[in-house]
Amino acid sequence: MDLTSARPVCMLMCMRTNIVLNDELVREAMRHSQARTKRGLVEEALRTLIRVKEEERRRAAYAERLDALRPRLARVRLREAPARVLRHARESL
Image 1 (cartoon, rainbow, N blue to C red):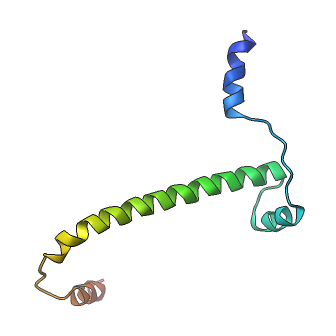
Image 2 (image 1 turned 135 degrees about the horizontal axis):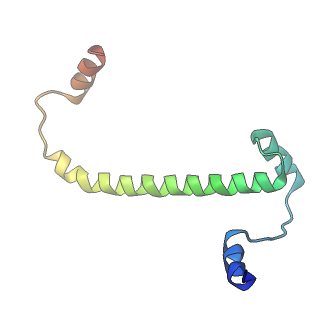
């Protein structure tokens, strides 16, 4: 087996690093996490950060699309008031 070809993949997928963590912050985070190790806690934190940032990006894109639609929606005339339509929909459930 040629180990030189495997090395770049490992370097990209599992980067080893040393970091200094605030002990109080780690204790607080461990109370909110199911992680059993600091490594697990850091991985969970990174996954959470990624998920939150992706959600922020999706919401920003949605807000942009909604803002682009608002001028067109302003020209739409409804036969009934939106509140009445929603009330009727809730009552029919």
